[in-house]
Amino acid sequence: MPDTITKLTYQTFQQSKIYFALAHKKISTQLRKFIYPNLKLNTKPLSAEILQKMQQRIDEILEKDLADGEKGIYPVNIIFDNPWADFLSYYPNIWLDIPSVWERIRQKKYQEFPQEIDTEDYPNYYLQNFHYQTDGYLSEMSANLYDLQVELLFNGTADAMRRRILPPLKIGLEKLFSGQNLEAIATQKPRVLDIACGTGRILKFIRATLPKASLYGLGLSPDY
Image (tube, rainbow, N blue to C red; front, side, top):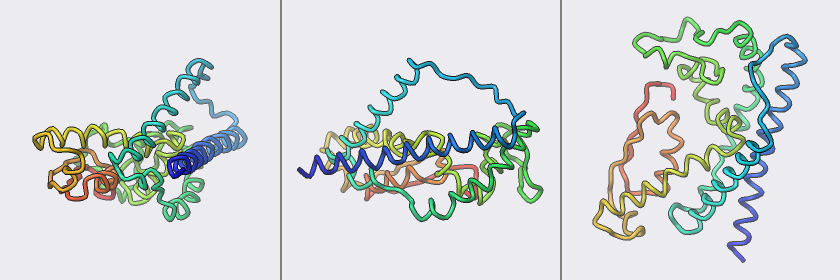
């Protein structure tokens, strides 16, 4: 019974994130077409076959995420982790930021930064508004909105996708520590380096999975 309850709860949790992200995209697209009727994006609709394959892949990822939590590869509670305080604080700012995103798209300004942002010594590829993201990776506002924006971008599955790194990481450490079992790994003190760590979201999941590990995050953005 507990496994059934966990499964139903997880499915409800994930489906609500997926539907919310899809609703956000639908509403924002309709608003853009109304406010900027002449703003044409160079996109093509996906075929039914591709959409079906994408849905299958999403289902597979979510099934593996739940199974790995139930097997104890990582604590099952982290599959329900969601920064609700950040969501309530920052989601309205996403809507407030959308008009400037549309305007940048209209003017094709993909490397535009406010004067107060220091862009010196960063590689050129880094100085972009990735996914039309205001300030790219180089402001506190951008850092605050990033994780929520990524969840919307990947239809509520970003965290489940991030957690795919945890099983091979933990199993790899098991081999490194002379074949000790998974439970014993939790008592060891490995050092884990996350290169291009962003906001450190994945490090939070690694901390829950390897509570004794020393974790290091390396990234270019001081705000992130």
